Length: 247
Image (cartoon, rainbow, N blue to C red; front, side, top):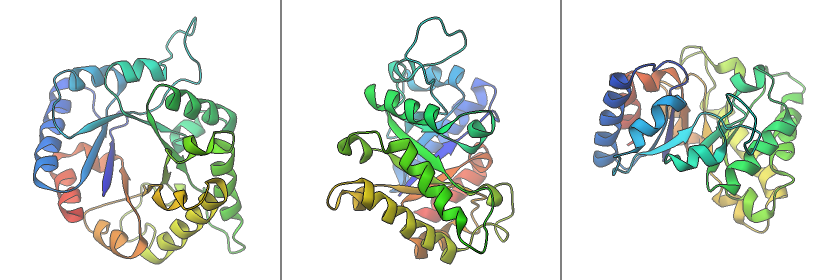
């Protein structure tokens, strides 16, 4: 089971970041849950420089450029150089700020070129009774990885994050039956994009109002491979409870 802690911009000082890392290291030692931390980029190298634990690190985003005269951009190569192994790409908050499907595909290609494992976020704004939201998720998947070589497609982790479930309570978020249905659908689309049985090996995560009260139920009946957790991952006690529920 994999849990990716997306700290977003909630963690702004190194003291809190190091405390969360210490908690994560302890959880990694005492459970069978694989933990990936995605801190803000200025804090990343300070956490990775002496890290010898099982905890891995992710970039919250990467630039669509490969470098050069691009003030403020952080490339996939730069993230890889400071110890990141993963990169979250296509998050709903980045899409809202202007990331297009073309940009997302470019970012994934750059991440792969520099040894980063992309975590591709997909998900609908709302659900309709006609099932049009399924077509949206299909389009996000195919446009993001369709131009990659088959071996590259197989390396991409998919994070399903329905926008309508974000920021809700556990009882208002997605139910286990609906999540199981979406996991099956995503695997169906991946089977069309990946050769042979390799789609079965692809990891699918869920993100959207994940709490200690619902994480186990979502895990048991949905065949999900893990979770992308936002705000709850920045509170040491809440994050510990989440991981322990998975374990």
